[in-house]
Image (tube, rainbow, N blue to C red; front, side, top):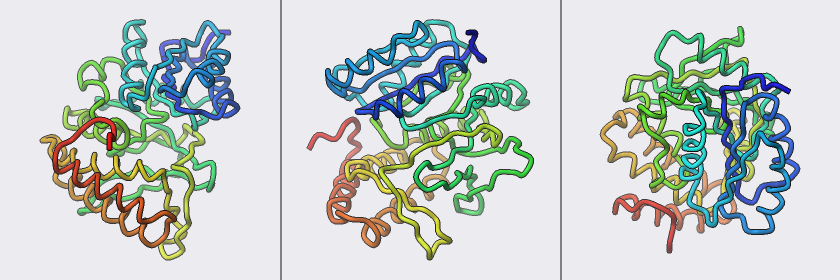
Length: 304
């Protein structure tokens, strides 16, 4: 069966994935793209043997990694593969995402028809746990503003896209560069989006393209903030989030408005962790180490 978008290569990064969830993702993607690169970040031999079984299609290339080099390194491994094979567009996907049957075609149409130089487009996703629909964000009046999707299911300008579901022209990756492997995980997509914007490119959310996605390891609804969900992660992720926020402050292409937003987000997460989340002191400890390493300009994986 011919793929709906044969010039698109999808890159799926895994780390100890749920087999059924991943199988559903691959089944959904196969008829939509020309090829899938499945990259496992050192989940171990048993898991990688299972992933090899899921990758029997001639349209899937399985690239197991011996250790976890971080999300950015895995994405770059897939990007290098796609560029060598001559694909025109690259789709990044997380293991816990599930696009609709027409998501890739809708994204591709949007990026081809866009008049502005476009770095990437991304879908509107719904959190599988909460049913809450995502909002695209713009920085306005000193704050990140959540933009509700337009009623006409159109295209909306945004300052940031999450990596999962992001469709990127290959020539943009050559111009802007690949993902920053020094960040390891967290804010890898934020940094790339801001770097692309500094190079004169635009980002767009495509509200007609839908995707299910899981944010964090769970979430808590905050009634005081209009029932907004507060996602929580493994404590180690708080280290990377805070450290990489501080590392990004050093980048000359990060606008002052975003520097303020990154600091404000760190403060919000710190307060939220103390007030709402379990194992709060471990999370605070990891954020403290993240602050120290960020100020010391330390990159790469957590090693303490």
